[in-house]
Length: 237
Image 1 (cartoon, one colour):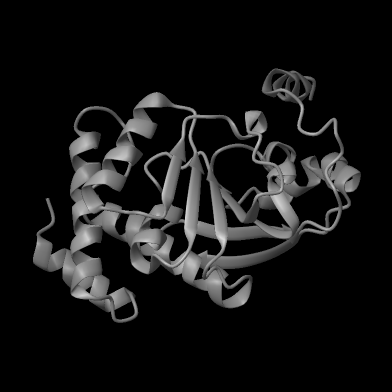
Image 2 (cartoon, rainbow, N blue to C red):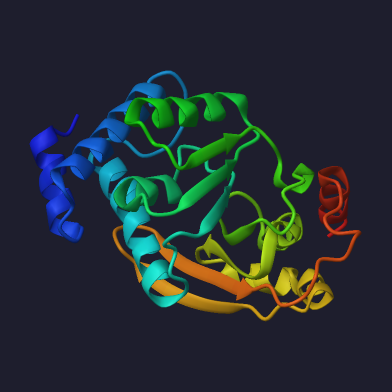
């Protein structure tokens, strides 16, 4: 396992003057992930790869979003299907200047995220065991994100109603992003969405492409559908 000194050196190398307290919190988060990974496959990352591709890359991605897409300070954020917490949770630990809600349907992941919240003493985070399409938090959030949870067209449908008018939606994709945008044309047209993309290229190993848009119209009452219907339509392709 990578040492604390090595981890702190990586934080200092890639992040903008993180405080000692922040580095300790991120290190504690790293240890909790490694411990959980010993029980089941929470994430495929471990050791130095976990620090770089998990924690540091997450912060770099959200630094870019904060500087170039939407100032996240004092905003209400929703992250869908966070799993181990990437990429939003490392950024919350790093900044702690916004409120975060996480939707995660899997019980063991909810328990892990709750453990992280309690152990690190994070105050401005709420973790819900729920699927986003079943949420009644209509028009509540300023910013909604997801990474590697589902195809773009599904993410658009299940999240649109949860964003305020003019909310920003950012979905992190990789090499298949163009195909996913093409597959999402029906829901994009139905909701009057204008997607934009930013290719962040590769920080360490993974290509990161941000597909984002702003909500400019009310969500129709028949959106979102139940997940079973969404999947049924997917199987018709």
